[in-house]
Length: 290
Image: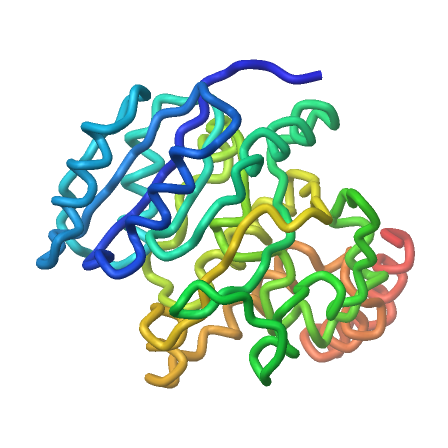
């Protein structure tokens, strides 16, 4: 089952001229045609807006370019989503590339399985658009689900209830869902979950996915429908070099909202530490929830 609902491709930009044209070209090539493009620009000082205006003049689908006052990457992401008119949201960053069938495949899975969000696997490309197949970063992050023990064979539906089956030491530290560019989700989901947390710099996407997981199942597509560009200029690398560490946010969210669905031993340890005088009662409560 498929439909022809409007999909908003949301592209937050800032000084993106180096890779932006390739990103926009991948939008032109989409086999799914009922799209609009929402560009939210954080007052770029290079040729970003010029490239966007040229793109707008070349395509037949609607392109809206909004100027945004810089106040962090999350704020720019949120602004692009807020301006979207579509029933579905496809985030695309200014340095990433969609395969031609990306939207067509993702919307098919989302509709067929009656989900509000799906994500896909991704290829890794470098600054010259060559596919990356080795190196330390690749070995650690090339397949976020596999490394956490999630076996995606064609398609997998991740729910909070099966978190305890996977590697807690991995998903309590690293994003096991994917970057925002690998996602397609409904506008209704955004209305219920709320915006990305603008106070975070490094893990705002994973924090958002965990908030989503509290209420929604997340479909994971095995096909690599996105080319994620890994390069030294991307925000995550800059934050890492600046020693931005927000892992405690993830830990607090797992223990606060998903406690009874995570690894049993870690949950029990947390409960005993937090409630030493009531550990027997809480241990019994935990057992009931299992």
